[in-house]
Image (cartoon, rainbow, N blue to C red; front, side, top):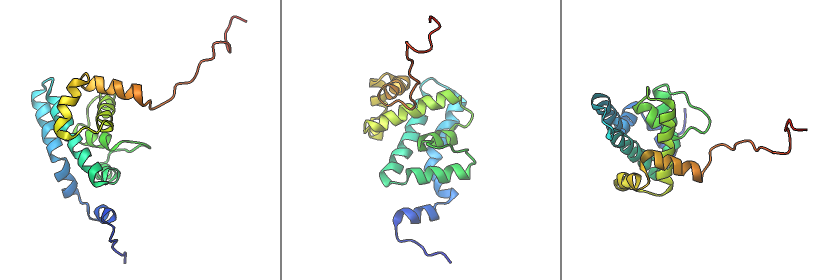
Length: 160
């Protein structure tokens, strides 16, 4: 028989059920359903604001990675090394969206979080920084994910 931990983080991991996780992401899923029906240009902001609210709450409670892992396992999202909890939330809400678009949204939301923006200030901050594309661009400028190989102009030239 397993002993139940008194650590609140561990208890959450054991007690989290699909109903609890579903309740956490329900607003994002409802917004995604509205997005599919209407498809307005700015409807995406509603969805990403809901995703950001859930992520912000998870980070505040220090359960983001664990919750994302549990959610990914429950809805069969293939996880990769270094996958952000934001990506898991977006995959849960809009599984059929374009891969590059989802990547851009993740970068934008990671940037917004890195700037310590509260959920009520989300839209104002995003608009002030060039929209979602502008935030993703700023994130790419500040924190490169991958390093590009260096080119040595003197080596490997055909002009020997």
